[in-house]
Length: 63
Length: 154
Image (cartoon, rainbow over all chains, first blue to last red; front, side):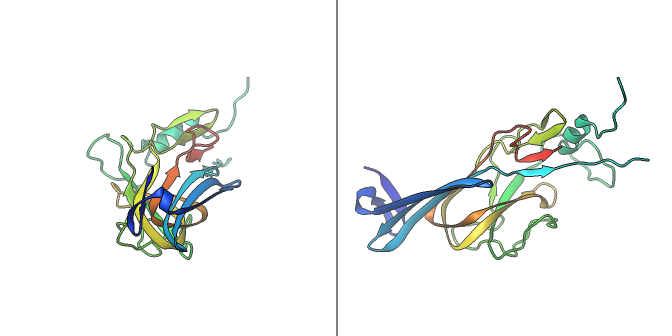
């Protein structure tokens, strides 16, 4: 049994409808999970892993 | 052998360590690393390379989220800057985690800024539109190296 923190308080996962998915592209790999109760979204979490990070290409001047 | 024009790799690392001051700098009380924070912004915000300091404009607003975002929780906040080849790099020591968060208006951006130095902006990172409901947003840090480190100066 797993307890899920929801907008209705902590609830047993078995009472909820679970939906999950992922996005995988050049910029990120993201997973998300949602729990629904009677058609209402009561929990959504996401996990973002960055792929495309901040890169600075330096240049120097000549004389 | 021949001479080769270049920006010294050691200089790139030392920039990340705050060693050089080509212009007016700040008086530091010691040699300890600065502290940094991470703030989240709505998709409608305009946070980009022109950011100079943390701003509340466009930041997500909810009782579950403190303005200014969360502290980077590593000790120190960043892995000691290093280099490989001619690229200097550093990455936050720990993942950035927002717990017990609810934000139902889409957001897609995190601003990392230096809370020790007047909230000066460091970097902007975007991702696909997200909402969180009574949940956790985790921003996982990449491998700290010359190709995936969060900040890289080549």
